[in-house]
Length: 470
Image (cartoon, rainbow, N blue to C red; front, side, top):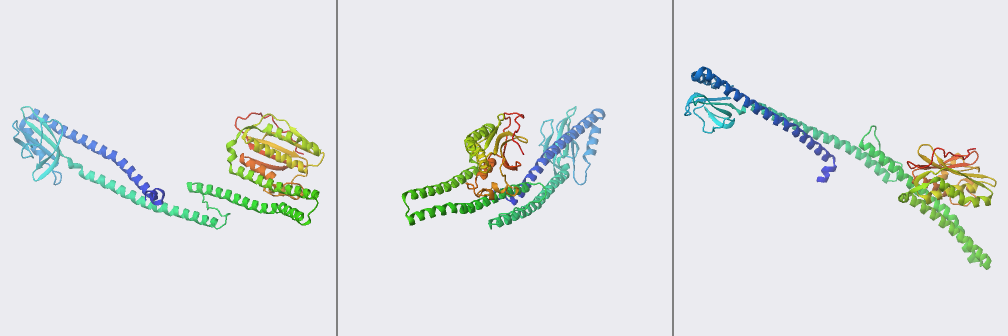
């Protein structure tokens, strides 16, 4: 029940009402204290003034004048209640004047203000009294009814209770409004979630105008749904692509083995068919290994192994590794020198990504072609590792498609591969918080791996690109 109150609209309303009542009480307590302190100070001042005034009259005009004044003032009434108590007594405490029948036994010898109940006529009055001893041993008692401000106190309490009632009403109304609003939002979310559960992954939670915590939550959930849809669509595409791309090597493998079984060729041809079958199996294993690498990268686990790396050195080492292959094909592989450019990343994945870009360029650049590799400062706090070539390039309508897994354009039909190279590079770029940008090199392709630079990285603005854009 406590958990329901804590995390429900009813709990919010109860909490709001409780906090409001506590705030009201904290506001009223100082007022009540100030009221009582003011009344006490005022009462003490009045009693001291009465005692001083009557004592002065005794000194100036004598006992007779004082007794007459006490009888006159003691007889005053405000409505039906007696608010003033006065008594003048001789040294033996016998009454000389006043509205009390005799000296009250409850009054002690203190000259401070005392509080007691005194019977005046047919009424018992709660009074604050001040006792004075006059010259000659006479005793003077002056007092005031402490309930004189009872009506004001009642009005204050009634006002406080009325305010508490208003707070309760506002709390109930606010709780109903909050509950109605939250239930409407929750209903929208439930309907959207139900539609998504039915398979409509493109459905999104409704967002309303304005800024609020719920809108922020809805935006976050919608971004999460975008990512889920992207992943599910990727899984669907991968599944379809695997079924399509693996069918060919597996079919070829089965055909080879079936032909060997049926024809029973001579050993030399049999070994040739076995080698072809092994090549088909290696192709299938290569596809699965690439998929497993991309799955591992997508999980973000490799971020734990990020270290400081030099993008210029990675580009140089990748160019050096592929230089013999480029020489055999008659392609000029040019490394553009640059100052150290440091960033945080996984050196193995970055080296593999740059190697894939160079390998992809080598597939399509003809003899006597050129490939440029280099690292430069990009726009803002970014570092760009670029592989450019003067080959056939990629049509604009295929530039986004070639980043999808298993996609192979028309120009790549006759080349080896499974269509995972550029997809793996794009996955590595996303892991590092960057992107793979494909642009025309006029002629050829300019593949740019744009990565966020580490703050305070080495390298200066002088590390500019020397990679030509024809």
